[in-house]
Length: 424
Image (cartoon, rainbow, N blue to C red):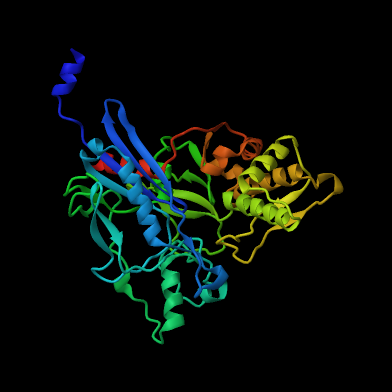
C-alpha cells in the first residue's frame, strides 16, 4: 500500500550543488525531506589541472580550465540521470580569489556527448589561482588602497589584473568593465540555455558563492560553534555577533579577516596558506631524498610511514613554524625549525612537531582565548588533511580546551545546494 501511494506522488524536485575546488570538483544532489534536506547522490573527481606558468615563473600557480570542466562533466555524467532530470535549481561554489579570462561570447562551446549536450571551454586563459605568488609585497604596496575592509593579496583576481597591466600595457587604468555585478547570495543569475547531462533546460542557476562560506554553511548551525578546516590550506572561523560591521579600511597586518556571510552576517576567519600542502611538501622532500639515495618509495607509502612513526611519539621538543608558503598578513615570513636536539631527529618526532606547528600557526592567528571569550563551546573539525591524519587530530585536541567533533558534513557542494534549496 505504501509503495502504491508513493508511486502516485510526483517526484520531488532536486537541487544540484557544484564545487569547483582547488584540487577536485564535486557535485551533490539535494532532495527535500520532512525534517530538512538529504544528500541523494554525490560525486567527486580530481582535476589534475595544475600547469606551469612561463610568464609568471616559479611563483605562478595556474590551472588548465579545460581539465576542470572535464572533471565537472565527468561528475555529472556519473550521477543518476533520473534525478538530474528533476533538478530545478543549481548552486555553484568554487575556490576563491583567483581569476580566468575569456573572449566575449567565446568562453565556451556546446557539443554533443553520450549523455546529451555539454559545454567545453573555448577561448579562455588558464585559471590564476588563489595560491599564485607573482604579486610581490613591493608590487602590492604600489597599488591603490581597496575601498574595503579586506586587504589586497597576491592571488586575488584584481591584483593579478594589475600585474598583467603593468607587464604588458603602458596604461595602468583598471578595466572596471571586467568586474562582475555583485548580487545577494542565493539570488538567481540566470537559467540553463539547454539540457545538460539530463538537467532540464531552464533550470535556475544561482550566483556563484565562495567555497569557504558554502563549507561553513553546510555544517554551522550554532553560533557557539567554531569551524576548523585543514585541507590544502587551513581555516579557523567563528560567527560574529548579530549586527557586527567590519572596519571601513583594511588592516594588512591583521591575521583575521571578516568574510561576508549569509543574511548580512560576517565570519571572523583566520585563513592560513599553510595546511595539508605543508605535509604534502614534506612528503615530497622525503621522496626526493630517498631518490637521491638510490631508493624508490612512492609518496603514499611515505605518508603512511611518517604518520605511523609520529603516532609512536607522544611528544616532540622540536618547534616547527610551518609557514613555508608565507601568510597573507606576513608574506615575507618563511618556515623555521628551532629547539633541535639529537633526541628529536627521528621522522616520528619531526612529523609530530610539523603537525603541531600547523595547528599552532592557525591558533596564533585566531587565539583559542579569543574563541572562548566569544562564547565558543565546540570545534567542528573538517577537511581532507584532518580526516586522514590522526596525528593532526591529536594535536588539535591537545590545543583546544573544548570538545572537538569530527564527521560533520562539511562540504562546499552541499552548502551551495543548501543555499539554493532554502531560497527557491
